[in-house]
Image (tube, rainbow, N blue to C red; front, side, top):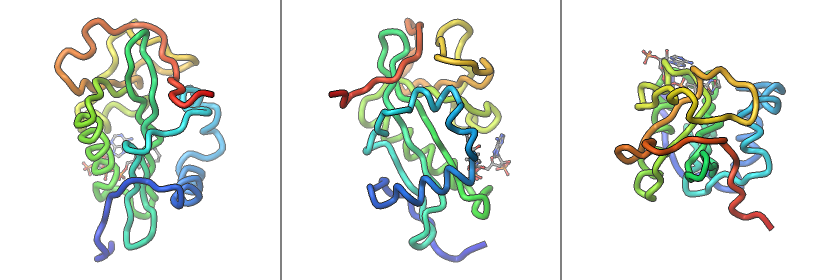
Amino acid sequence: MTDLPLTVRHETPADAAAIEKLHERAFGPGRYAKTAYRLREGVAPIASLSFVALVGTLVVGSIRLTPITIGQTPALLLGPLAVEQAFSLIGIGMSLIQRAVETAKAEGHQLILLVGDEPYYSRAGFVVMPKGRAEMPGPVDAQRVLVLELVPDALANVAGPVASLRLNAA
Ligand SMILES: CC(C)(COP(=O)(O)OP(=O)(O)OC[C@H]1O[C@@H](n2cnc3c(N)ncnc32)[C@H](O)[C@@H]1OP(=O)(O)O)[C@@H](O)C(=O)NCCC(=O)NCCS
């Protein structure tokens, strides 16, 4: 499709407009009504865990992670993840997930939660959240609430409502 090399780097403030347009194309206006969006509303993505994929200078993919709590336990919410349709199915989405997961692990985070397709995210090790362990703040298909343990048994005693963690709240 292209001979230009793919690069993955941290998101910068200058990428915001391109990412917003990518989200608009990938998810449409319905994105604001999703339960996962509620958890992200008003919460800044964690800069060290937000990456863009570029082909040349063109932003073709984006991943963001935000801080949440599950009960009393701090965790990360993965999303949105979006890849420009013209550049889909060439591994960009998985590269972004892997980069974010590796970085989160290196930073000492324990758990990543997301709402998405298990057949896709299971490729990166995500599993369906065990029943009754995470109470989402809105309607969601329980089979789409997925979790990844970054350290063994991180999920062992975790249960409760999922809430956003406003680290920078005034
Ligand atoms: C879902 C998305 C991020 C995938 O990104 P991508 O760069 O195209 O995916 P990758 O190249 O990493 O992976 C492609 C592989 O995953 C599979 N795949 C892609 N989306 C899938 C899905 N929703 N369910 C199951 N498998 C999926 C492809 O069939 C392909 O399989 P193959 O390797 O056997 O050929 C991208 O299609 C997208 O942005 N979609 C619209 C927004 C969206 O739905 N985001 C995810 C929110 S949960």
